[in-house]
Image (cartoon, rainbow, N blue to C red; front, side):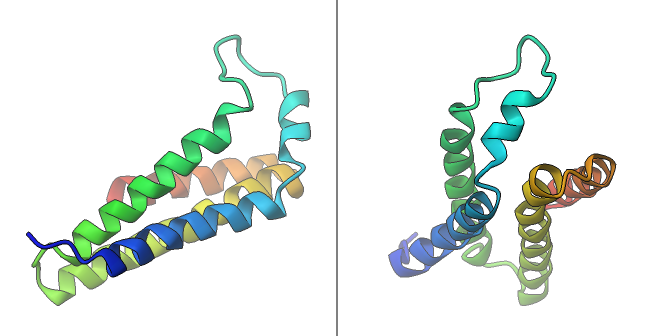
Length: 120
């Protein structure tokens, strides 16, 4: 299988840009995170940017694999729509939780996000 590096790069840049923009908008999130009552085994705050960057790169690679899978256009279109919707929900979750502090709404948003992730 020949790799289309231009398409792969675009596929990786899109989720990274979504994550970077969301992170920029909710840049004060770590201050809020420190004040939360967390369970003893919760990871330290400095790990979140590292882990999310890796996850966004993997999401981009996965979208590239879907686009180049050779499936029907309908299946690819449906999969990419669900992926885009999931990115949309992912983008707004930290803003809803940290910036707006709408905790119950953020929980419902997160449940929808998990359904979309499972479906993706």
